[in-house]
Every structure is written in C-alpha cells, then in structure tokens.
Image 1 (cartoon, one colour):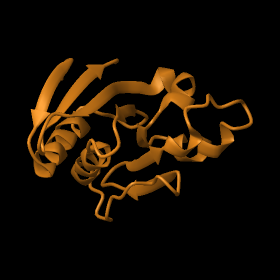
Image 2: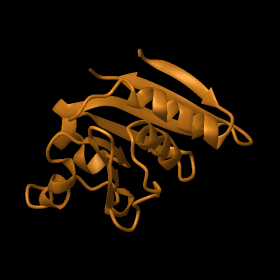
Image 3: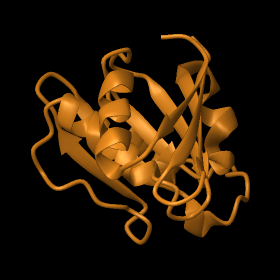
Image 4: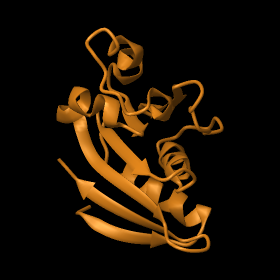
Length: 145
C-alpha cells in the first residue's frame, strides 16, 4: 500500500479497509490511529483483527487501556490512550503499556500521542479518520515503513 486518502460509507466498509491494512502489516508493527470520537477507529481495528484471525469481539479499550486478541499467527494489541489526556509518558509510565507492546504483536494505538516517541521505530502506519457527513468517513493513510 502507499499513502492514500480513502472514503468509507459504512461500518462494514471501514472494517474492510482495516482488513486491507492488516494484510500489509507484520509482527512488531504499530499503527497509530487518530480521529474524533466516534470516527471509526475501533471499527477499523475490528476489521484488521478479524483479518488477522481474532475471533473474540473487538471493543474499545477506553476504560481498560488495552485489549489483546489471539490471531492465527500473531497476537493483536488494541490500545486506547484517550484517558491519558495526551500527556507524554515518562520512563516509569512506559511500563503501563510495555506489556501490551512486547513481543511480536501487531499493535493498534488510538490517541497515540503519549507513546509516539516510544514506538517510533516500530510504527508502520499513521491513520487519521474523520467524519465526512452521514455515515461516511474520510480515512488518511500515511505509511511510514
């Protein structure tokens, strides 16, 4: 895939885009997800996780901070750092998320600003989702590696 701007018109289309993205990722990859509340970040992750073989329900980890799903050949981590309020994590705070990012997981991080520096070398893709009227979403994909 290359940098692209896509539009989806339903949750199913957003999930299909997540599946397309998943096909381009490898174990150890991190995907940074930004966008307004309700813009479809978790829906995109749901499509990616299913494409990677996860069978459990994929839900927003806003209050749990992170969920992990077992895929066919890789574990999927889904982090939501909204509650951290955009503060950059210090060295001690990094332990909060280290377990979720350890190993060869493919990680999707919503509201990633607190850990951008921590995952810079593993970041494969930055995604920005925006409401675009009705059920449409504008999805900007910026491939980093």
